[in-house]
Image (cartoon, rainbow over all chains, first blue to last red; front, side, top):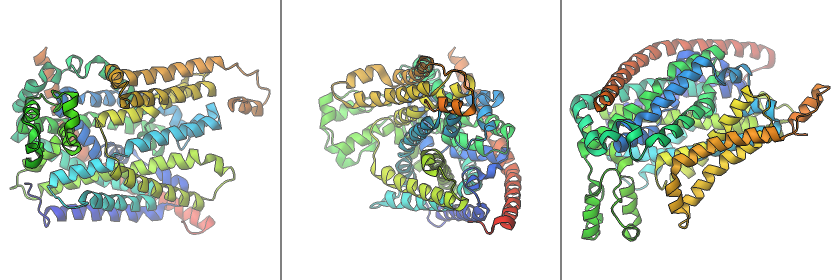
Length: 553
Length: 57
């Protein structure tokens, strides 16, 4: 049982929510133009940018999968965070791609693409970015709700749905009214609350569970692979290389990162935001990773305990024995295909999610009852993390829909008032999508694999297009179209062969890391081959001819 | 080799806790100034626009 107190913990959470709503709605009066709504009038300075980027990139879903990494792979699970920190620092210092992008004055990446690849590629890139991004964020809401219910120990019919609907409505209200301005101001508040909660819980874990116990637990369950990803049987060099691709591509093109760069006052400020936030990405993986390792150390590996007494009793004795004898993190690893098939779906689902839900289960009993209000602080911190992520995701993907996908319908200039109204409408629509997809779609399989595969659908092609656009003069629309098609086709094909019974074994042998790497390499090759295949245009006598060539004419 | 890996993670954990605590405090203070500056600039722009075209949306 948890010790959630409605009057104390509830008051802390209520106060935080009230402050956020007031701050978010108060800045609405400063929104007068589309540029204010989407990019805060490009008036964001360094420290606000750091707070906003950090808060956006850490949601409950991030906390869940990074803690799952700590639980499954020990310290080696924090490797993607180190790689992203390195990528972001180097990109910030060198200005690789981000300098020409910010210098261009574009509002979105596809807008920059139009100048090199033409209007059709801009539109197609917008569609790919929105599809990848919306599929990716579709799982956020349910994950957040699962976490909150597990930590508070609250139960009730449709409580998850009601709670997440109220939360999303609150976020949607201030995002719709104030756009990026509300997002930045609330992100700042949320960064402070979130960081306070994360640090307090981490220090408590280090003090009460202890460093030596964490290390011993990782050693016992993961062996040397818990400290070194290269010798971990489930990770290996292919995982590290794939992560290097993903983290670099995400830093260059992930819409929520890029929105901060584009909202910055100037290129120098944008680059400073990148270098200043870089090390946060290490914290983003290691801090929840420590929570996951603490869950392993304190709860141990006892998958049957996640089942109710009735569910457990309904299992045949042989199956129970095999599950009890399984090794972390795969509770079903010793069962035959037939035995797995016989498990009732809710039981199977619970056993598959043992590693994902270990950290919230641990937190629900770990926080000391004598430290009054600590649970409230943790909940406020996690709500802050989730709200900042949701608001930013809704706004930044709306900006691509408005700026790029609707571009063909805005040939005649729209008034600022009409532009803002359309943006508000699109943010509201994304909120509705998030609510329905997020609450009704239940994720099957590994959360991280889902996020990286759906992310790869756009990261592989968009990073290729951006690098070629900035640094390769020969790049053209043939290469860009090829890169978009190949970059999306490989991850989608992998998802399909994973689902078909006849090819599932082949998908297992290939694995998500090789298929992911193939998407990046394939997109780059398609860009090179496509661009070289297109005949060079004759020397253009005028600007109109050059534009026609860029359009593929 | 094993000890080296453990030392690496210990140092990284210490660095993470120290860096994050410091940056949180620093950003909490400087971020307020950034928000004030941003809103002041936008208010000035709004007043200019208001004089030219009428009230904002």
